Length: 373
Image (cartoon, rainbow, N blue to C red; front, side):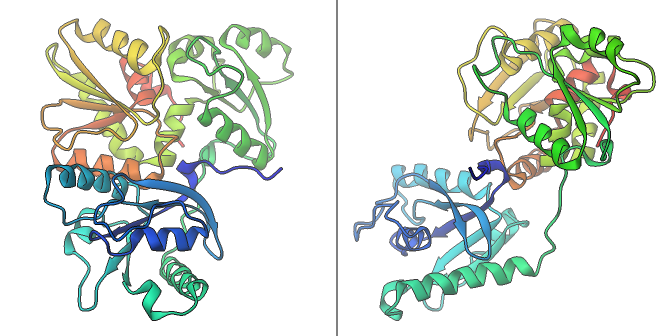
C-alpha cells in the first residue's frame, strides 16, 4: 500500500483571481475531475475547496480553489476572508488574469515566500486541447519551482543518526486518539526508522524500568511535552531530552523566534492576555493539552487573573495587538508556509509567539536542559 502524505507535508498551490476568472475551470482541469462547480453565475465558489493530488513533475500537492475577489457585498467580504486564509498556506499562487492585467503587488508583499505565477484567462477559448493547457500550466509550476532550491528538512535534525537508540515517551491518556498515534509521533517514528535508528516506544510509567533493562544508555529521549517535567526527573545524566512539539516547532516554523518568544514568560504579568492557537480542530477533553493542561500551568505560575483565549484550525485573528503572548501548537497539520506566515503576522504587530513544548519547558524551568534540533 502506498504511504499517504499528510496535507501539512504537501506543497500548497492556491488559485487566485477575480470572480468568474476561470479558477474553478482550471482547478478541475488540473485535478482531472469535476471537484468544483463551474458556472457563469458570479460567486459560485463561496469557500475554499482543497484536494490532494499528484501532479506530474511536481509531486504530492494540495490544490486549493478560492472564492473570486472583487465582490464588495457583505457575503463577498466573507469570501475574501476565506481566500486570505487559503493564501496563508500558499507555496505557489496561480494568479488568473485577463489580457493586460498585472499581478497585484500586495500578493508578493503579503506573501513574499509564495511563488506567484500569472495565468491568463481563456483556458477554453485559446486551446482545443484541455490536456495541452493543463500540461502547459504544470510545466510553468515546475519551471518556477526549479528556480528555487528545495529545502530538505528533518524533524530530528542532528539529534539522531544511524544506529542511535532513541526512546519515545508517549502517554496514552484520554486526550490521545483511540486506536492510533498522533501525527507528530507517527512522523517522528517514521523518520527515525528511515535514518536507521533503533526505537523504543513506551509510556512514562515504563521509562525507569526500561532504562534498567538496557545494556547502555539511550542516545536520545523524545517525550510528549505535557510530561516534560516528569520525564526530565527520571533522565540519566548526559542523555539529551526533547519533545515532539519542540521538534515540530523547528520543522514547521522558525525556532529562534519561537525561543525568543518564550522569554516573555519570565516577565508575564498576572493580568496579561495570552492566545493559545492549535492547528487541528477536535473536541477538547478533560486532559486536553491546549484547552486544559497548558492553561492550568499558566494560571498556576501567573495567577487566575491571566486571560487566555483559544483558536483552532484556520481561525487566527488578524489583529493580534491585544495579546501579550501567543503560544502555538507544533502545527503538524499545517504546512511550513502557514506557520511562518503566522509568525510574521505576530512579529509585524510586535506580539511575541512561542510553541507549546518550548513554553511548557520554560514554565517548568527546564528549557535550558532541552535538546534543540
